[in-house]
Image (cartoon, rainbow, N blue to C red):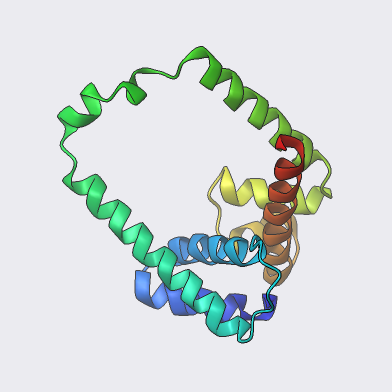
Length: 158
């Protein structure tokens, strides 16, 4: 299914008008497909991946619309924005610690590809250039890192 990645990103770029957003949606679509809990075999993997990606685009658009329509006063009175409670803060610290442990288990190029994308927001070509590896390898590293972290977080949190 990984060989559909570039094609999917091009397809999403045309729809979203933004390659970075298209790469993010493609990553999320791959994760959704990889995270499926039912053991049922996917009959048409390409179509399933595209449908998942398009659903994510629709969800993203809806969230954006809601954010645009929400008045600032609502954010002001919403208690979630006044700082998390101590237990929530501790939970986040624990999750970050677990995430760091999961990332530490990855090879350096895999971890670096993931961090450059997610923390520094670099594009795949920029990461490839910085790390001196191919763009397709960057894509594989990012997908593998996301999959690994998701699996480990699930294991540790259960």
